[in-house]
Image (cartoon, rainbow over all chains, first blue to last red; front, side, top):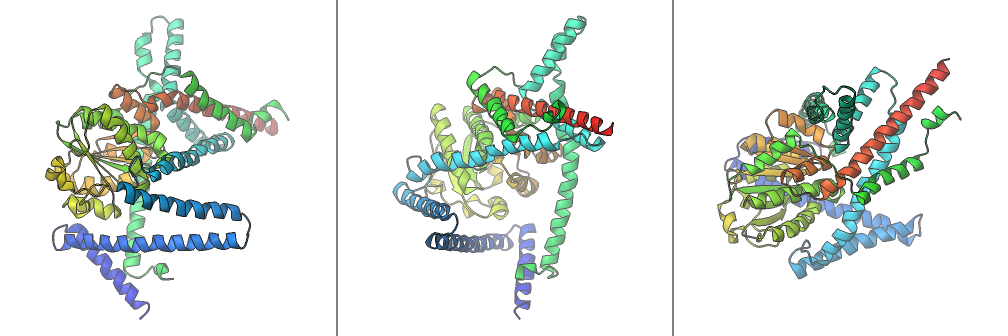
Length: 232
Length: 274
């Protein structure tokens, strides 16, 4: 019973959702909205569970003076401080996103810089990793390196400047070569465009088809009850 | 340690310092750059430009502050373009943390273009639901968004009274840093033939060219370069154009380091082979 009921629920829900997706008219179309409401309620509860688990874990560490308890304290204060400011802004300004709301101040001066810094710091690691790992060990690696360099150079104005400098140099050596036309060709950018729209797109298309097929296979396994790991 | 070995094993801290300088110096010196407009960005621009005055553009904020330096200039550029064309703008979003960025952009652009909230644009905010909601808007937007983000009923805004589903939306703009744009394309573009343009981070752009080639989207604005190209097209340089020299120098440095590292690697391998 414990196993059969969830399996029947999953099968029937999936079947209804599939029908609702392909027939978006009433009464099937309404099913999607109803399921969406349920999904919203369930996801709301998962947020509650997450907050509960996170708070318990870090409060325990703070009270027991565990390793790094100071960070846990900052986390708990930040979590509840943000929530409190959000609720206050909601009541006072009708929305936490109102420009004069305290929540918006927190968002502008803490959340934006912190998240941007996290993302920007990736650039430093990418530089270090590329410098150490991007080696022309074999033909495939060489191709990859050349393509990467061409995309990098073609994707910024530097590529155009280099190309125009080459044009000027060629013109100086062979005056018959039209400097303006040569410079306008922007070969690096053109190669980058080709790599992105043809070479990369074909690879991405293959990956996309593979992912979709994998997704369909996994969904079918879950719907038909072959894959039951979600019950463990 | 030989010179070529040193060349291929520079300390990470030096690399970090070099990158910091390569990015910071152009922001101080502000060298002039000429920006070439690529075809995907031109197509995106033309998709907005083709719309008749009064048409509705729906902009979905599917990015958050982590990718704001790249995507926010696109939002500002598109808003400027849409307002200049007298288009009506509906802002929504699939990421709750992204919506305040829309408010910041709207409050920057709307006053400078003399646009009024409710008359020229509305922010309907965030609702959970993802793909189900995207499909649901195809029937009736009010099934999901009865009010704007401040709780004001949609029907109290004059232009919103004639917006019910995608038939009433001239163009959908997804400004995304993840796979949300793919969902808009597959579920809304595929199902309702909705015209879509996508603005995304440079890292995500390669994923989207397949849709452009297949004619599933009208255009792509990819990364800071794409944003700078859009700013060039609307003839209003902004933070993306300002950031291009920094990105140029950063890319130049990476290429230089790649060459250095490989020269060192090849020379030391040659030495070993002997």
